[in-house]
Image (cartoon, rainbow, N blue to C red; front, side, top):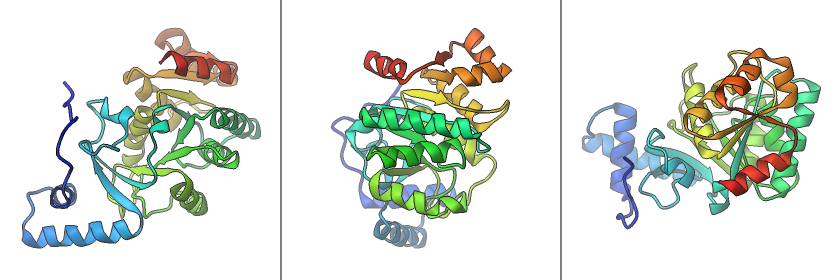
Length: 261
């Protein structure tokens, strides 16, 4: 059962500091640890990074409704109510020219319709989706598998900074966290939770994008797979035939599905 936070008292700075101590040190904080946490929070605040708790009114609504989502998030940028109407566009880092073009075209079209584009800031499809949304003046949210002061991949540092300025960066990890092989699958679950619909453009068997699609289905989200992906990949055909994923032939399907939700 989810907790109802409506009418709850605002989260105090002392509570955030205690939460940060527990996250980073794994134990109840003493006075010295709390002092360090206060300094860290102030330093991150100067960089535009905030620690959000579920009780905060601007904790993302799509995540708040899911019991398995993080109790706290670090965010950089502006949270907006329109982010409730979000679609994840994900895919392989080793994208083909056609895959990049399809991701860009879909992201542009949806962003022009006021849909927030969510992705993971990885090379390839993710980068194309974020860049295309920004290119038409649209809204995009990047969910990181590292902390918000890290840049991975390094060549996306400028894109990450632009999203922080014009959209939103989200991470469930401490801002200085460098990332591990386990943090990126965890990141995929947050992508799936933030978006009402997930679209996989191009991805191989065992890829992170396939992992994100499975996570989205477990959360009860709608999953679309591009027709070209279903034609090329046996895992995608199986997901359509046996697991309820839908074949995407045009962005109108996504908009209709969003309206239905």
